Amino acid sequence: MRTVLSALLGLAAVLLLLGGVTATAVQRTVVDPDGFVALTAPLASDDGMRDRLAGTVATEATNRFDLQGPAADAVGEAIDKVSTALTEDPAFPGAWETSMRRSHDRTMATLTDAARTDVLQVDIQPLVSLLVDKAAGSLGITAMASPVGDDPIVLDVGQSAQARAAAIVVQAAGYAPAALAGAAVAAVLALLLARRRTTTLAWLGIGVLAGTGLLALAGVLLRAAVAGGQRAPGLTEYLRYRVVDAASAAGVPWVVGLAIWGAVLLAAGAVGRLVVGRPGAGSAQR
Image (cartoon, rainbow, N blue to C red; front, side):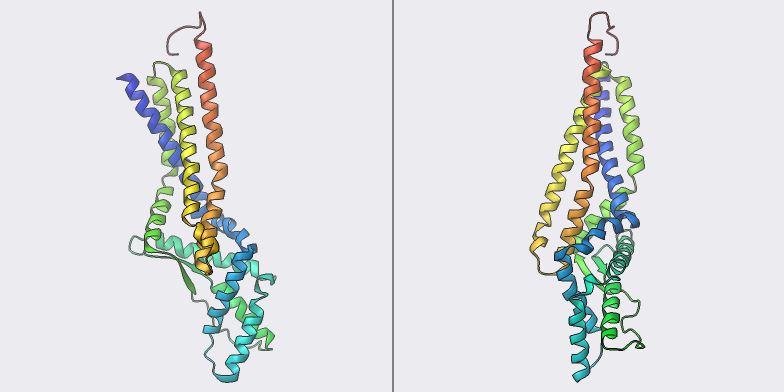
């Protein structure tokens, strides 16, 4: 009975550790606003993102003007011309960061409200505003009030099922400290109840290594699930692909850290087992 209880506690420790580390990674890279902005910052220089973004922002900017005839043609031409160089503008990185921060705030508000987890959206208002200002400047219109305003200009980047799954992940991330504390307590209890503590320590290491492998496989499968977005012509599908890909890549150091800890536990248990197994080393609680 004591051995069985120790084994169950060891399994619980491994599961809680894997869940706690995963939740911590999600909390720091996705849930945290600064973490998400840092995660998506490299996307501003992604060629695929820039090409798709220019066309989408130009369309949204054109739709903001209520003009007819030659005036509409002139504004449309100016927007199309400026949009091709928008991502090279010195103000673009700042507008991109603001867009990602607004998108994050909007998404977190949606995912944490059970009544609103119906869709994932990105707010491109800062980018559209920048394009309109540049287009107006190219036409020599500097005193014109911007037709964009500060209201969100949102695009749907996920379906309701994806939004519900993301909500579960985000809400679970809040339990990271409790999971890590529970893992520590369960591991200590498993060792205290074990008849051979060094063997239990080695099995804990094996469990962590096995769980690390499963986490790595989950990352590969997650990337594969959105891989079609890499070739998608639209901005939203491509953006979803790149964000998921960036998040998966950001999780690699955490997985490597877990693997190192697992190897350390396994090595410590194996070495300890060899030491206590020597003649005269004592036989109690090996």
